[in-house]
Length: 443
Image (spheres, rainbow, N blue to C red):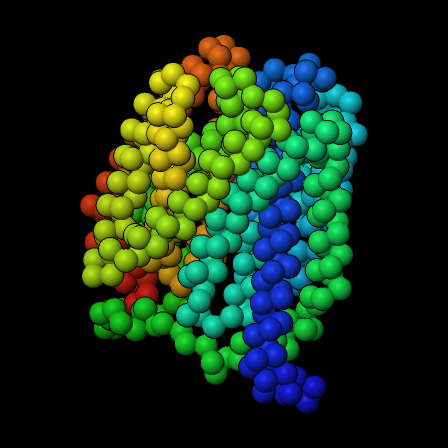
């Protein structure tokens, strides 16, 4: 259209709008996780007022992650058809209103239902939000933007935990939750005013500027092997053993990361006898280390694997091993400086495999179904880690105490590391399967 030409012809204007959209989308991502994790900061006063045990408290975190895991893929598909901007607005309004409902809940059942809808609203925000942002930027920065979005969850958790604890001490736990809902509604209003489907289309990176790396073209073709596939079969997401190892290893290492995000405020409250606000602030520091570690570990793995992609698997094994040793010792030591140092090291590496796992999945799946592959990885991360950890550790804490549960939690790194060792061995065979699919050969 004629009206699109001027905008397309001004790269600086297009870049400015892209950064504005990125800032708004990232702010909503922070709001997403602040609304999701603020409950962890107020577990103690909330549990006391509503007479909840740790298993019930953990389930309030788990139900959100469970819905995110189950609904990310179908909602992402719907968003591509209905419109990403419209979908993001509906998502943010839903999770904000559901968070507000949590502030008025009088029973565990009411709170669980409200948290269920928080999960429904947040289900596909990460995948749809990053897809929207990437459409406005050149491919050369897509990796950095994706890593920032992945780590944004930890930073949102950090802000929610710290701010929630402070507000809870001053005004009560209900106001902590309500403030997150109000923030979300204000941000989505700003997003709706500035970001529209039409404006996004006008400011998208022109097709002629997009450099697509044709991985399949670099691979050895199989001549006369039958008709070429325009799209890889969906079943190939689950028939490549190396990809399955990446799914499983990623989900297992996310288990311990979820333990840190959920239970550290309560740990500092009980083990260090800190008030709710100080416990939340202390936990926020370690949550920040989780997010920082995701970015740094991903960058490090990329650097060492430039000449050999399988080194990403090796890096994943190393990250799991460091986190395992650090956290196993940390939760067995008396409170003090040494424990905090070990806890910080463990937190930094606790989710270090996130980026490497995503990279392995992307490198071993056909380009035509990589979005579905990322959705499947998200499903594994949530079902095996983010949803399972809060509930399971809460149940164990009710029977053996929180410290007893935290002492055995790092054991999940053993199967995580084992899966990555197996994945490294299976990587050549996985590439062969991808090569066959790209060449149109039925296997």
